[in-house]
Amino acid sequence: IKGKYPAAATGCAGKRNVCISDRGEDGAKMQIELWINEKKVKGEIEPDEILLDFLRKQGMTSVKRGCETSNCGLCTVFLDEKPVLSCSILAARAAGHRVTTLEGLQKEAEEFGAFIADQGAEQCGFCNPGLMMNAIAMFREYCGEAFMEIPGKNSGEFSRDDSGEPLADCSGDRQIPKEYLAGNLCRCSGYEGQLRGIQAYLAYKRKKGASV
Image (cartoon, rainbow, N blue to C red; front, side, top):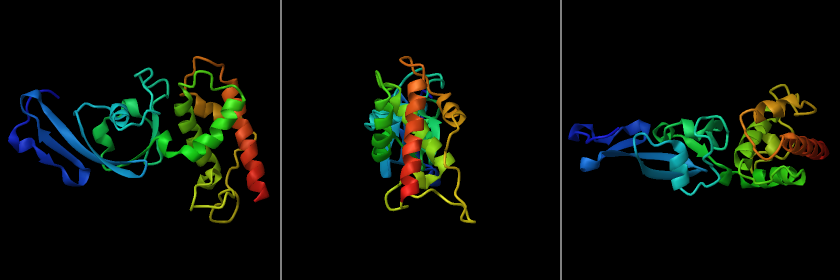
């Protein structure tokens, strides 16, 4: 949006956590407030600024710029705990919401990343942050949040439903990882290394969970 906002159009939008500030002849910028990795952040954005650019300005360098057409998965982040492509979302849409990047998931990423590296699947490593974000989302969706052993929330056992029965344990189904990898492009590998790393990690977590 170019041009100068009239005085009546400036101000804060209250519950939406968005403010518009008059910037004179250069146009207008917007003030937004959101949570990034559980820290409240306030920042100034262009009306057409995408979330990817805003996060990188905040030092979240794990969020990579790849295709810019919503096809490569490199810019994946969590928006309110759901994986999204930050190149396809306006930063203003994230106002008032919680954004999680790989910088906020270091324990999970370090543990899982060791299995990817062990299979030689990291190579240049440029696609790894997006891959890890989607893999972690997969682990939480199919195995339950407890599968990730989030500190202070669980003891490392498999999640259970209201009846006490264990939820899906991610065992033996290669189609699940392939579905989550479908949106992650990698120019270095044939994806088999990533699949082997995921399967090895799942086997490790199942064994660890069974022994708790």
